[in-house]
Image (cartoon, rainbow, N blue to C red; front, side, top):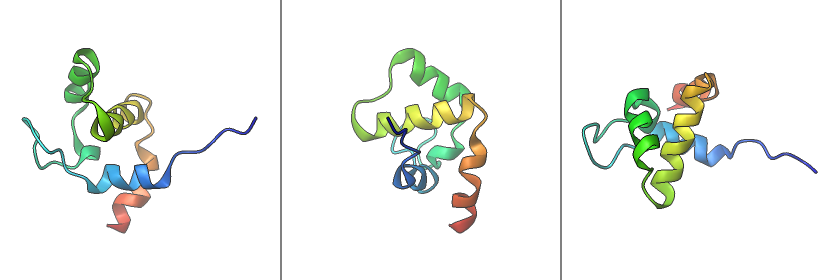
Length: 76
């Protein structure tokens, strides 16, 4: 069984897509504060692609993996 690595497009989206609503509307998903993502985690992430993106950035941040995004942020 082969493990798949992170989806490159998903990671690119995290450094280019802006939060579409709420207190942090307009902020890049990768720049959302952890406490905001923790709130979503406790209340439930939105359905669909945005929810998947928010849960992904939450996991990246709580596991100290933000270094994965630095090269992509620098390419912007």
